[in-house]
Image 1 (cartoon, rainbow, N blue to C red):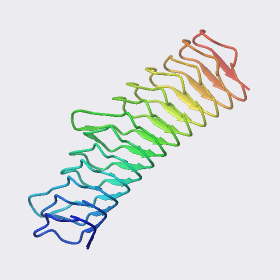
Image 2 (image 1 turned 180 degrees about the vertical axis):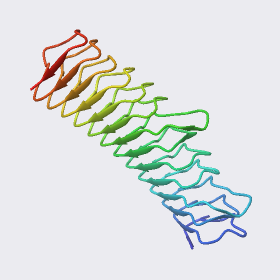
Image 3 (image 1 turned 120 degrees about the vertical axis):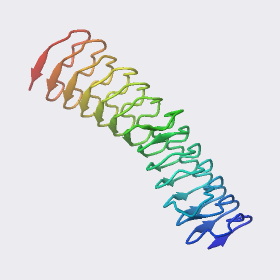
Image 4 (image 1 turned 90 degrees about the vertical axis):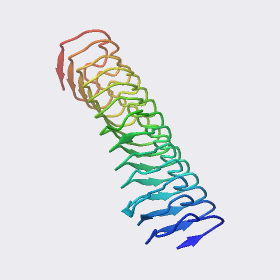
Length: 232
């Protein structure tokens, strides 16, 4: 099904595709079972052998540069629009996962979620960012789970962090293996190996590491101390 100027224009034996919008699925010759809705959605996708792609791109420029990637769901203006040979990504929201070219297995839900992530080689990032601006500065960090508006929004190359709650772990740029659960938990920390659970838990921490704080504003005044435990 094709509707729009040059939509599905290059198709010869491609089948079971839906292309709606100017230049949607413009280049594909033999790919099958793709859905492209929006101007330039999946514009560059092109499989030269019969392939079930199972790509879904909905939105202006969604998945525009995707060439031979498969199993991607890209919904929103410019969602995943730089991906090329990338597989199994989910990007929902304006500018979600907009810079990545070769990353795989990322989930970005929310405007600008993971918008800076960019792997230049085929890499399974296993990053999950849900919320407006969640993980927006992540570049090559991996295995981060960031849920909440601005959760982990300053992280760049960090690995193995968990941030759950508005503004959780929002200042850390390179800290690793932190767990921040609760609004503003570890909000100012740039260190590693901290666990903070509760509203504003260890909120003022900057460079202290290996702290455990559980409870409302637990260990809240600590700034540079390490190896502390506060519960309650």
